[in-house]
Length: 251
Image (cartoon, rainbow, N blue to C red; front, side, top):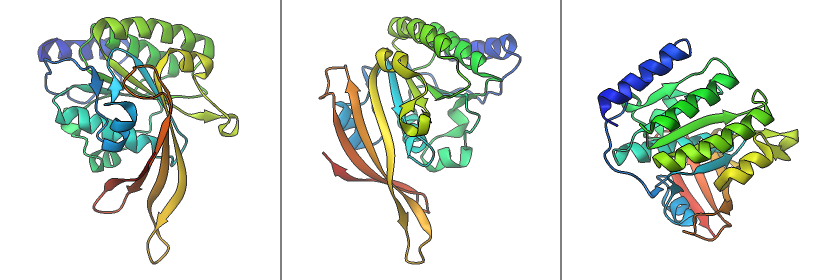
C-alpha cells in the first residue's frame, strides 16, 4: 500500500467513525516482516527474534507494570526499521511524552482514539483488512469490551492478519485482582505469543525518590517455533533523564 492510499484509509476511518483523532502517517515500508524486533535485545532473544507478523500477540500487565513502556519501545523499534505502526488508543491513556522518551517519533506515528469499545474493534478490523500497516498496537482490552464480541473479533482478526502479514499486539488489563485478564480464554487461544509484565520492585535514588521500576517479563506462550514457549527476563525501566531500559537478568 502506497503512502497516498494509506492517507485515504485514515480519512475513511475518520469519516466512517465520526472522526477519531489521528496523527500523521509514517513513512512507507515496502518490506514485510517475519519477526518484528521489540527494541529490547534480551526480549528478542526470549522470543527468538521478536513478535510474529501475521499473528496476534498479547502483552499482559497492570498499572506500573512496564507493559506500556515495552509497547512504546516496540513502536520505536519498528519506526527505526522503516516499518509503519498504528496505535489504537482504546484506553485513551496514550502519553506522548512517555512515548517520546522511549524513542517513538510522534511525527511519524498514527494514533487513533475510538469513542467506545465497539468502535475500537471495528477500526482495528478495518486497518487489518486493508493491510497498510506493519504493526497494529491495540491499547487495550478492558471491562468495556464484551467477551463474546471480542471472541468473534479475534477469530476474524486472525484470518485478516494472516492474509496481510500484519503484526497485532494487544495489551490486556488485569481483572479479578490480577488473577485473570480481559480477553479471557479467547485471547489466550488466538494469540501465538503471550507475554506477561509484572513490576517486582521500585527503583529509588539516595533520597528515596522513585526513579523507575524493575519488571519481570515472562513468556507464557510462543507458537512461532522460533524459541521455547516459556522463559523470563528482568528489566529495569529508568524513567529519569536519561530514560533507559536495561536488562538485569535473562533466564
